[in-house]
Image 1 (cartoon, rainbow, N blue to C red):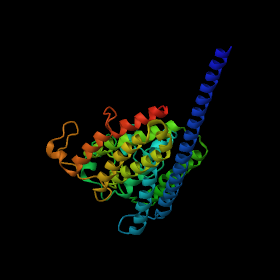
Image 2 (cartoon, rainbow, N blue to C red; image 1 turned 30 degrees about the vertical axis):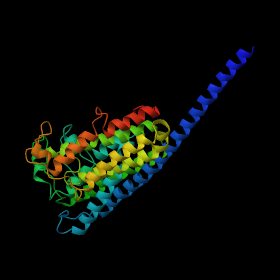
Image 3 (tube, rainbow, N blue to C red; image 1 turned 60 degrees about the horizontal axis):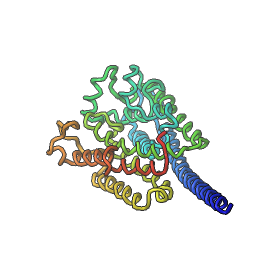
Image 4 (cartoon, one colour; image 1 turned 135 degrees about the vertical axis):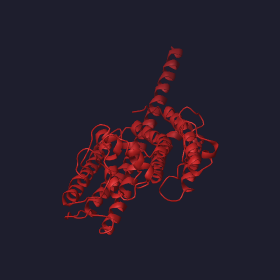
Length: 342
């Protein structure tokens, strides 16, 4: 009888330990997702206000549309608001893309991504090519880099970028293209405020956002990078990194409980190396790509250039198969926490 009582007591004790562990995990999960939710809410509010500011700054329609000379102040304000929208979006892209697949596409898709599905001859309306890059393409239409135009001009259905040339185009830009971005960013903001954020979506979204750092750099070699008209891709990447670090900070207590403080220190060291590499480059554009850069077989000479050094670093840091990489280490912490990809 005593033996059975002792066995029963040990069994109950184990159940109590397991229950305590589950409770602790629930607390870590709740705190992390709440912190991420607050961060994303704040950035989506900034995104919504920036989109509204672009629309508001767009000149009223007149017979000759608008241009960089006659509407310099309005163009400056639109470009500034566009940069604000871009920064806010890139900080939370990883956390929201899986939740708003349709809205995310119509907000952030590239020009080539749209026209490969359907040609668009009216670049000022709210159909076909839309979103932040559609607006960007118009706002910087007078200064698009030559290698970008070379890439786009080969695309089926290509139409050169331009400022609105008449009243109809100016009216469509302000009251259709810009207004759609305002409307859809508000929808994302309002819907996210009520959605139940899953830790997997937040944490693995962060990992995906970091993996894309190498892809964004590589695409610049062919003129396919995202913010290619404004030459703002490095600023995008800095915002991605800032967003990833904010999400990681929210999960630190959980990571420490499951993986230990050493795992946190290792990942923070990796983050710092990437941040330091970005800080070494002045401005918002990626360094100039070597003339004949081949990402499949880069030369030693190319890898010694500022672009080549950054490209190599990011490919090393984001390789999921390399157990020393930043991305691999983040994946390990996700496994330790029991967080599955969404």
